[in-house]
Image 1 (cartoon, rainbow, N blue to C red):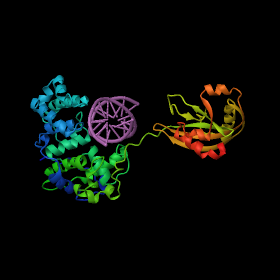
Image 2: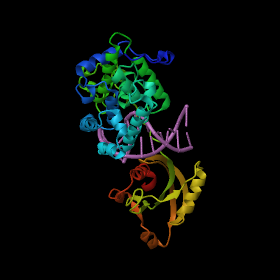
Image 3: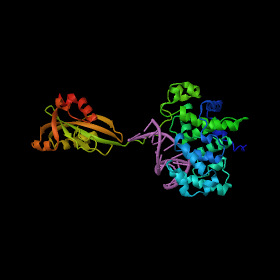
Image 4: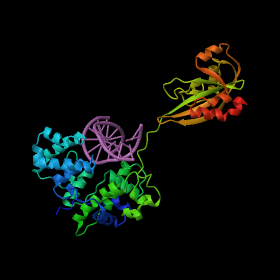
Amino acid sequence: MPRRSAAPVVSASASIDVPPDFGARVVHWQRQHGRHGLPWQNTRDPYRIWLSEIMLQQTQVAAVIEYYQRFLSRLPTVADLAAASSDDVMALWAGLGYYSRARNLHRCAKLVVEQHGGRFPTDPAVLVTLPGIGRSTAAAIAAFSAGVRSAILDGNVKRVFARCFGVHGYPGEKAVENRMWAMAEAALPTAGPTQADDMVAYTQGLMDLGATVCTRGKPGCIDDAGRCPLADICVARRDGLTAVLPVPKPRAAVPERSTVMLMLRHGGEVLLGLRPDSGVWGGLWSLPEIDAPGLPFDPQEAEHAALDHARRFGTPSRAAMVAELTHVFTHFRLLIRAIRVDMAALAVHESAAHTDGWRWLGLHELDALGMPAPVRRLLESQRGGLFG
DNA sequence: AAAACGGGGGT
DNA sequence: ACCCCAGTTTT
C-alpha cells in the first residue's frame, strides 16, 4: 500500500462546492458503464501504465492498442526500453506521431534506470519530475498503478468539471485552470477501506465520462439524462449551457480598419466603380473610397476631404456625412463612414471615367450589379436622398 | 478552417 | 511565473 502523500491544500479547495458523493457517483458509474478490458487496465505495472498514458495523450484508444502491445512485446520492462537504441524506439513509435514524446519516453526510461534503480516511481511528486510527465499524467500513473489519491485534469476532465460545476471562463487561462485543479482535488473520493481500488475506478471514470458521455459536440445527457451519473447535479445541464461550456479559447480581438465611402450624386445617378479581381470585394461594384487610416476622425475634415476627392469626377457643391456602419469580416472589422456629395457638374472627360471602370448608375440599374453587402445596404438606406 | 490537446520551452 | 508553441486529429 503506497504511503499517503502530502494532503492537498485544504484551504484552496474549501471554497469549491463539490457534492460529497461526487466521487462515489463516478466510481459506481465507471464500474457499471465505463470502459473495461483495455490492455493497460489489466495491470498495475507502472511502466505499462505510463506507456499507455503517453500513447493515449495523442491517439485514440483503438489505434493505441496495437502499438501498445507491439511495444511491450519488444520492450517488456523499463530496463529494456532504457537499453534500446533510439532507432528501435522510434521504429516502434513510427505512425503514432508527436515524436518528441517518443524521445521523452526514451529519456525517461534511462532516468528511471539511473535514478530509481529501474523501479518505476508511483509517487506523483516524483513522476512529475520526469520528462514527458506533467501533473495530470503523473496523477493518472499514480492512481492506476498504486491507487494513490491524486487528481487528474486532462481535457476530458476539464470539460466534465466546466459543465458539472458551471465554470465560466476559458480553462486554458491560468486562473481558471487553478480553480479547476482545486475542484479536482476536492472531488476526489474520500478515505475508506477501498480507497485504492476506488481511485482506479474514479480516475478511469472521469476519463470515460468525458470520452463517452460528456463529449464536446453533443453530450449524452441531451438525449438521455440517464446516461450521465452527474446529470442531476450538473449546472450546465440545469441551465441549458452544455453547448457553451467549456467556453472556447477567446479569439484574438480582430483589428478594426476604417474607410470613408463617397456617394456621389448627380441627376438621379450615383457613381460606382468595379473593384479589381483580387483583394477584398474583388470583382464587385463599390463606392469610391478615401483612405482613412487614422482615428479619431473629424466629420468636418472628412467632408472637406470628400469634396477634394470628388473633384476628380466633376464639380461638387456640398458634402454631408450621412451614415456610419461596421462590417465584420473574418479577419477584421471595417468601420464605414458614408458621405453624400452633391455634384453640380460632371467632369468633361467623361470617357476617362469610363475607362477607369467608373460608371454613373441609376436606381434601377443597381439590382443587377454585384455589390458588397454593406454597400448595398448603404445605398438602400440613402435611396431617398440619392435618387429622390 | 479552426479548436483542442498535455507538456516543453522560451521570455 | 507566464505565454506560446509543436504536431496532429476532430469538428
